[in-house]
Image: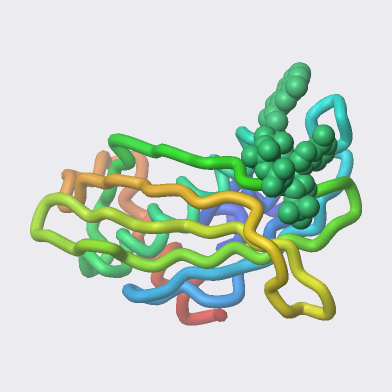
Length: 154
Ligand SMILES: CC(C)(COP(=O)(O)OP(=O)(O)OC[C@H]1O[C@@H](n2cnc3c(N)ncnc32)[C@H](O)[C@@H]1OP(=O)(O)O)[C@@H](O)C(=O)NCCC(=O)NCCSC(=O)c1cc(O)c2ccccc2c1O
């Protein structure tokens, strides 16, 4: 895995799990994941923490774009696991902003089971609250350029 690739820098943990982004805009972020062993808890069901990871990742990328490519930080995440997603199943994730303020953004993230790429039953629903417009540390100066490059590649 190339640590300089835009997929890696956009969201390394999601990249490692095989998550593929489809859309990243200020009003919508989406992507897909196949539930592999790497994503499961001992009962061969999508780990609840992976669902939360997807929620955090999608909301953060969307909020980053919506803030004009400023640094954002998640400050709260709540999740309801409505039904399990079993090993081998295909998952579609979609996210949209509930509120975009100058400082605070709230994003909704929904995970769905899919059949032939179409959404069927909801797996989980999350709300993520983020603070935007934070200073970017020197060691991460490139990260917002990487995000722009990633978004333009989709
Ligand atoms: C929690 C629920 C089972 C509650 O269901 P409820 O009774 O409210 O609703 P329904 O009866 O209408 O069912 C809805 C839906 O749930 C599924 N379901 C129900 N019962 C079962 C069951 N006995 N076994 C399997 N699945 C069941 C069923 O698919 C129904 O869907 P339909 O399509 O038929 O409508 C339910 O809300 C639920 O299953 N929620 C998802 C729970 C989940 O997946 N949580 C996240 C992962 S759990 C987790 O992260 C985790 C668990 C561990 O035990 C760990 C142990 C060790 C390490 C890590 C662990 C870990 O990470």
